[in-house]
Amino acid sequence: MRPARQIGAMAKDPTIKVLVNVDVTVAADARKAPRYAIEHAVRRRFNRGQVPEGGRLTITAADLDPTG
Image 1: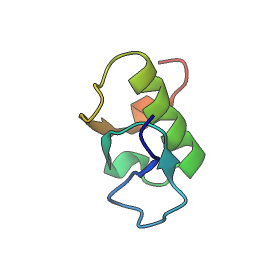
Image 2 (image 1 turned 90 degrees about the horizontal axis):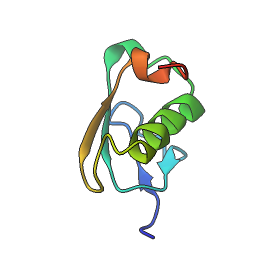
Image 3 (image 1 turned 180 degrees about the vertical axis):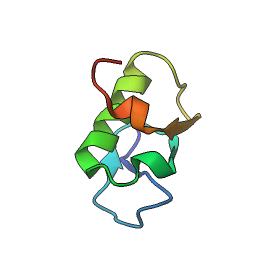
Image 4 (image 1 turned 135 degrees about the vertical axis):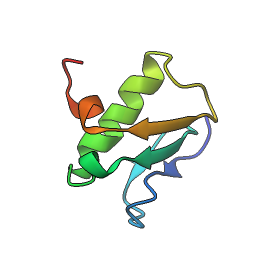
């Protein structure tokens, strides 16, 4: 398992951690979302196989919806 990696170019906050090695960009429409929602969206997309290890991912407001 690789170490946790900080996500979000928008947040220089080191508390945002995800246990996958993915470069994440947070779109403008999702920047007001809580950190846990962004982390969960990244894990969900990774677990579905929509982004490979070491890949790039952009999180939008639509990704924050758990039904989608």
